[in-house]
Structure formats: structure tokens, C-alpha cells
Length: 437
Image 1 (tube, rainbow, N blue to C red):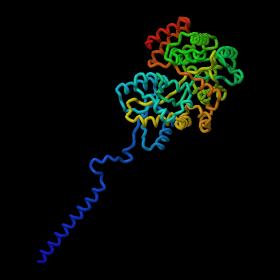
Image 2: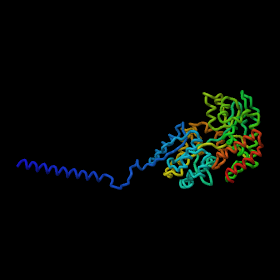
Image 3: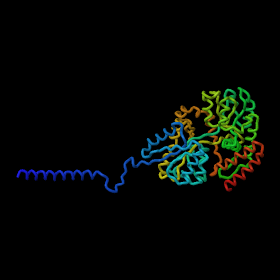
Image 4: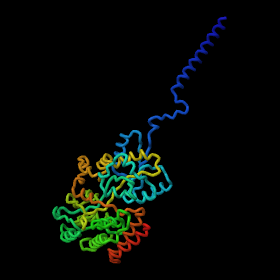
């Protein structure tokens, strides 16, 4: 009898335990997501953007991305390093975009790519984003901004700028002796050549390569000409362009430049200047730092900088630098714009100027004391005025082909194989054929 009661009692306890377990199970299930609930956690709601650019040896990109993510917690930026060789980088983008890949969202573009990428349909026009957010494009260096315009639309925003500048020996050339025109440069270079153990009066890049195109753009634009005008029409066979090209050839054939100047690229030009061999030099902004490098330069603290000499229409400097655009196939164009807007905006450019050493394309940043403290060169009036004179190289969807036509024909004119007029006529014919005009 006792055993029977004990068995019944155990059965009751077992039943209660099962019931409690069932209740506990029910309570737990009420906290779980119901079937079909699409509510996402904060981590799941984050958008991941892939930003591609060439190798950055500075901390500029890293710092800029950190600042963006701090103010945009819903967006993660994944940096993808592209080849440092711009040609290989260009080809990698072409391969991805031809395959309509959405893997990359935001890209950095060389200033000579936007028209090509726009024509091919690789990048999104930014006009509607710019308008809806009230971006003031007047704040930008207009030469840099124009390099990203094609068929009346804005295809990228400029991040930083390079431009051709005139460097000179301050120990040989007084401030009031800095040449203002090309004719003054020739005269002053002839006068100063040989002083301070110099061998040359002037050095520039005139080898048959892209650097020659940059110099040619500067001569032509300073006399009011253009290879291709703003409407996209070939304009090289004009009196203005011909006058500019004649001045280039005159300089290249003068006795103030090295006898082998047609072999000079930026490398040889820099070497001649830092070794104290030339009084004047045309080069890019990095030359200031190079010529003041105590480990390699013989002219430290004797480096002056000024805008390039003027022609009939003023000074002109070939535009270099990089800009940012959005992959047409990006799955996150809205978020991609937010990142691009930050990166190419005042805050992003300030970070890049301080940590990356790049010259901003937003002109008001040249008054920012933090930027000037990090880069004293940016406070130099000659430097800033030189950047303000920047003009873009010919804007064309097949720029490499146009560049080659220019290089070949100007080289022939310098070598005396054809006159400047003949070179202009040939360039006009070949460029029109290349552009199907």
C-alpha cells in the first residue's frame, strides 16, 4: 500500500515537471522571432561599400575612412588596393565594368578618365545628387571640376589637384626677376645660365610621352588656344594654338635647355634641378619637397615657386590629380554618394591634405591653418596662383589615342621633320578621324 502511494506521488511530480517544462518552453518561444519576421539587427542593416584606388603610402585614406564611418555608423567602407601603375589600374576597372560587376562601388579616377568612363557607361552622372544636396560647385578649382564634365554632365568630383608650376633658384633669381611671360623666361634663362655652376637655363619635359602633352597644353592654352574646345570640337589648327606650339618649339630648340631635352621626363627634370644644374624648371608640385630634401638635394632652402609664364592670354597649367566616381552597377548608389560627397567635400579633403599631403580642390581650404601647418607650401602665393591656372588636357572618350597623335606630331615639329603649321594640320585631320567628326 505504501509502495503504491509512493508510486502515485512520483507520477504526480513527473506530471508537474513536464507541465513546468512545457510552460518554460512556451515562454521562451514568445521571445524568439516569429516565422517570416524580417526585422534586422543593427549589424545586419549596415551597408558595405567597396572603395577602390591605387596604393596610398600615406595615412590619408585610412584617416578619411575612419572619420566617415564615425559619422555614418550604417556604412562600412572596405578599401580595395588597385595597381599603383595607372595604366594597369585603368585596365582593371575596364575589365570589371565590361563584365557589369557591382563588386566595386566607388572608384578614384585619373583626371583623363572621366570622359572615357562616361561614354562607355561605366559611371553614374552625379548631377541629381549634387542638386538635391545643394553642393556648391563654385567652391572647387574650376579646371579640376571641368575635367570631370562630359556631354553637359558631371561624372565625378575632384579630390586633389596637381598642376604644372615654375620652380627657380632663389639664390640666383630675385623675386622681382621671376619671369612673367615665356619671352621673359627665355631672356632670363639665357642671362642666368652658368651662374651658380648651372649648366642650363631652363628644363622641361619634352620626351615623346604624356609629359610632352601636358607641356603642350600649357603653351597652347596660355595663348588662348586648345586642342579640343569645350564643345568637344577639334580646335588645334587655329592661330592661337599654332602660336602656342611655335613658342614650345622655340623653347625646345633654344640654347637655354639641355641639348638632349627631348629625352627629359619628370625624373631627369627633377634630377637636373636638385643637382643644381638648372636655374628654372617646369614640374609638378612634388618638386618643392624633392628639392628641399636634405638627403639628396644640393639646393635646399633655395627653391622658389611661381605660376608658369604667360602667353597672350595669361598663365596656364596642365591639370593633374584624381577624382572620385560611382560605379554605374553599384547596388548602393545612395550610400556610395554619401561616401563620395564626404571624401570630395571639405572635411574629407582636409583630412587628406593633412595626412596625405595632397593639394585640395576646394579653394577655401588654402586658408585653413591646420592644413597650412601640415603643408607650409600650400601657403605660398606662387603655389596657389599656379594651381588656379590649371586647365584640363583634351577631354575625349578615347584620350589615349588623342594623346598619341599630339605626342608624335609635336615631336616631329621639335625635330624639324615638319613645321608647326603642318603638325597642326595633321593633328586636326587625325584627331577628327579618331573622334569621328
